[in-house]
Each structure stands twice: as structure tokens, then as C-alpha cells.
Image (cartoon, rainbow, N blue to C red; front, side):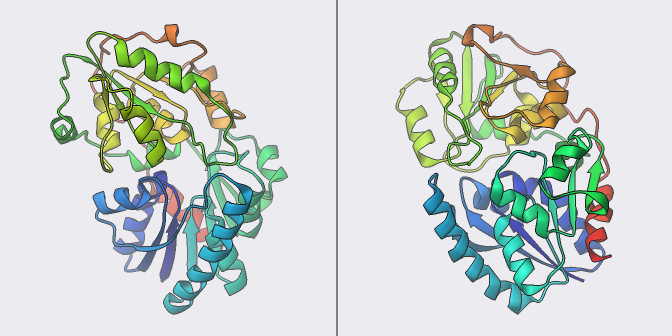
Length: 335
């Protein structure tokens, strides 16, 4: 079997790697394409996943997104035609959806946020299978085109699957020159170029507080060059901004606190048992609604809520899940 995977954001190599590995173990041939956006390519390189870079993100404007979608989809069409996949898999890639539709390639889409806009809904409607956490209400997915046999709901978080068997690597601590005697905070900025992004002044106030707090080191993992430059411009020894993609999962496992406006990093912290505050300013999805209700994810409303103290407990996956469940759901697209 030939399977094509498309990675369009930094979380996708992590999410898709255990699925890719299992198709390869079955003797399948895989093609991984990637979009230049944030640390997507850097993470593929760090994970040693062979890939082909096709196109880049179109920026925050609707015109830029539409132009990038058209241009990248056209280039992917040629790549896909040469590879001739039996199945296409992505985590919300609209480009893959368009190519799959025009090339009549069965596709499966994973997703864990149901309010991501019209383009993502197009991907859902084209896909033969859509895999989501079972904490997202069925009726919400039906409204965006994923209903009936098309919808596959899996238990837990997507992070529980790719963090199954995860062992934190202390090498990232040495790589960044961190002192674990200090309170270690991991910070993720808002998704400024995403269509579901809303203005988020709280993030800047978080950085302001961490920059002047005693015995605190905050590692800021930016999405864009401008976010990295903004954090560095504070000239605070408390703020560390990595120059390249790092082992963020190990860093989160060793952290005392995570403050993030992004979904995946929030849920990685939950999966690894690290205290985490969300500063997400968009519409809250079903996964986060449940985590907040359970008290596993806290909503930050004021920077004074942050308790900058050392955490208690060993790092590691709390509720690991078998990625084979995802593989079987994806294979349903061939039915």
C-alpha cells in the first residue's frame, strides 16, 4: 500500500509519526510532504522523518491563504500523481483534501478542534474518514460534514497516542543551558496566522511578568519569526528562545508550568501531568471544555494567577493509548 501524509503545522509530524511507523512496519510505502510553516520542517528533521517540502504558509490574510492554497495544491497534485498513493492522510490539511478530491484518492483527516473555519470543513466533507477525540460532541462534527460512518471517535487525547511509551530526554535541558533549580515555565504564543485566532493581549502580559520574576526561566517556543524577535527584544535573562526546533515534549515533561495559547502544547502538558494554563482567546473546543471541567486545564484570566513554584511528581505519560486504534480508523477510508 502507498500512503501519502501531509504535514502543514508543527504538531502534525508528532501526531502522524506513530501512524507512519505502523504503515511502514506493515510493508507500506509512504510519502511525507510538508509545508514551510513555523517549526514544521524542523520537527520533521529532528524526528528523522524523510520528507519533501512543498510550498509555504500564506500568512494571516484571507487573500494570502487562498493564494497559498491554490499554489501549493497545484504543486502537490504533481507530487501525488508521481507517487500514486492508495490513501492520503493528514491532520486538517486542506491542500491534501483538494488534491485527493481531484485525483480520486481516498483520504482520512484527523482533527481535535471543531471550529477551525470553512477551509477545514471542506477537508472534512471530502474525507472518507474523520478521526476526532470522543470529547467533541457528535452534533458539532455533523455540522461540519463529518457524520455517520465517516466519523470515528477515539478515546482520550491525540497526545495520548503519540506520547505512549514516551520517556523524557534530559538532553534538551543541557541543550538550552537550563538550571532545574529555577522554576521552569514553557510558553507558547497565540496562533496569530490562524483563522480561528482572536486578539490576545494576555500573552504579552505573561511574558512581562516572567521576564522580571525571581528564580524563573521561561522557554518561549514561537510559531513565527516575529514572535521570536518580540520575545528576544525584552532582553531578559529569564527568557530563552530556542533558535531551532527542540524536543518540546521532554521540555514540557521537566517543566514546572506551561502557559500556552495553543491547543497541542496545552494537551501535551495534560498528557504528561504538567500544570498548564490556557490563554487561548478563540472559541473553546470540546476537548478543552472537558479538560477545563475536569480541572486538568486551567483558564488564565490574570497573570497574578500564575503560581511560579516547583512542581511535585515525576514526568511521564499519564493515560497512554495504542496508536493502532488510529491506524484502523484511517484504514476505514478504503471501505
